[in-house]
Length: 230
Length: 230
DNA sequence: ACAAAAGTGTTGCGGCTACACCCATGA
DNA sequence: TCATGGGTGTAGCCGCAACACTTTTGT
Image (cartoon, rainbow over all chains, first blue to last red; front, side, top):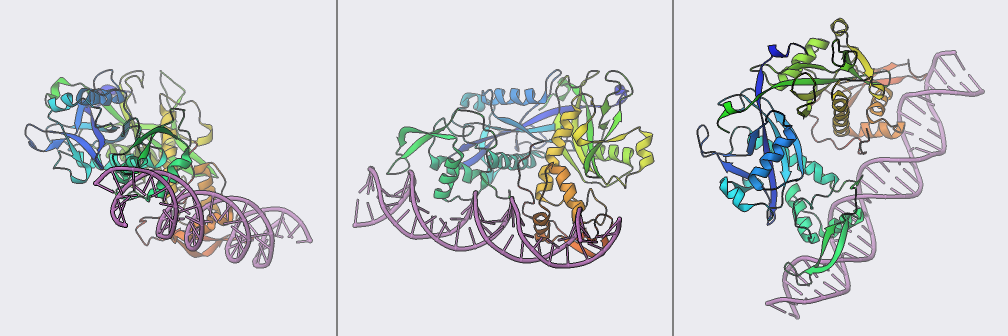
């Protein structure tokens, strides 16, 4: 591990799989690549890791630049380091994924970058190995959502159980029994029922819930134990 | 993503958490750092990612150099990219873990590097963030071993169910009921009973088993569903 | 009256846990 | 004969899936 100078240096980038949820669909934020090669293909939001900057910081910076959002749930997915994964130069890329509320991000900011939300189930052609990054990010999201309650991160402050269930159905790409889903979530004792109802989605009206800010999310048992197929 | 030249380049290394199993203990291969800083502390086996070499290749190369082993189960753990994680220079490190059979590796090769096997449960002082790398690698191993049968990778070609159970107890740091463990494993229908017995560990003698080379390891259900505590 | 979602209850199955029990054999 | 692990069986528990059923209210 001595002789550092004998060894090559590399460009190191982060690519962010920014995931949002809207109208029953899980979406990812892409921007159009405006130059060759692969002009016209879409790309994840990315940036280079700078001197004195950790990759976590770099990912946060990219997220901030493109959505205006700060202190968002982010997690490392995997590092892609094939020497020929990009065509112009060798770039080693650390993929991250982030969960944002699609109604809360800075739309001007996104528009300025020409970015666009694409449904996970119907992605356009993307650049390099970015499709694989998205795939791996979704698998990570599934693992994450299977162990602890996502929802805070992708829904508004308050939400109905229908909305939460639809979110989980979008994440796991399968349907959940309404009754059983309700009981499972309730048994975790992490939601607090508000006194307001939402009548837009049903005649009877469903109570809003919010996450107990109470605490610690420690050691929940599994929410979904299914296999991952995506 | 243009203007590559405006961006800094970094040293990129791989660090291998080489795990083995011997006499009921999960062990990791470390070698003593022979120079300051942190002289006397132990270090994971590592190396720099070269031009035209993927990080997977680099990890394989390091493993080959230090154990003489080839085509071994390896998996990326996580990338460590804090700017100050090493003291001499900034090095971004991609951590890998590997599973090797402690009786099969090239002992001369290991000795030549001054390397030594340390039990996971009682590590010496290690350099930089290597302890965290080991921790994360073990968590990954637990996840892996919970979904599919490790054993091929860490035990000899043939093994008794006692040996397999002891291995799982070492990985998960808890005990398994002998009867239940046997039934669980058998229900997976992936082991083939040989006609030889091992009498060294019991009076009655236990049949040797080996993994059905049959095939595909597809979609096993969970072997261990417990939470991860390490 | 009907549809549609909210919300609750019930039942059955499958897997896991805990533990009892016989077997074989070396010391 | 006794201790030890091999190997099998069983009973209880718990969680989940499937689905029935009641409630509420807008149209």
